[in-house]
Length: 226
Image 1 (cartoon, rainbow, N blue to C red):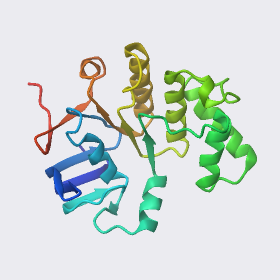
Image 2: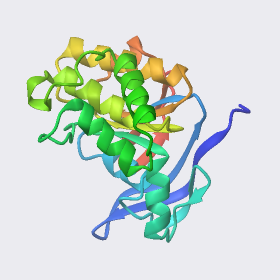
Image 3: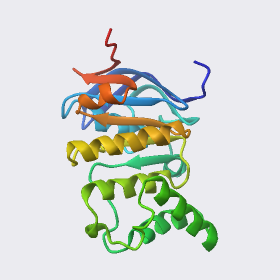
């Protein structure tokens, strides 16, 4: 594997409120990979993702994300790192007081985009990419769950991130809608963003193959089906 290494964890310890959540984590993500993190609710999947985007500190071991060393990371560096990641939450977290278009514009302006025409072009591009080309004028509450999740993915890819973290992106959706969301993420992966997706829906793994890690008994280990 000579593709660029984006994330590397070596012997990482992850605690929350003095409780060991994950122990001796060894994990790698390379450019263009699609990785699933599976495991029961409460096994540490979301907690692991939180360390990648600096929401939670690691308590031992070594961790690198996009060239940043996670241990004792300063707040300014965390903000820098987050701008290079796309994050898809299960509960959408769209701003409910503004249209889809304005949700996306807000993110672009917050991340340093200034030119009106460039902003408009990028919004148009991402909406088209997620199959929501004519929904920019809608308010989030006028969209179905699946449509809202597509907008969340559009928001995550605005700045062409090297990595997209998707935390149970199909968790609140019906089966068919969930499959379409995974298809969309796989499509985005083919265009160059590596994807780390947590899920407890094991059916997705057979339909949409990827590298699988399992969270179990405080460990995160690559899952070998053979």
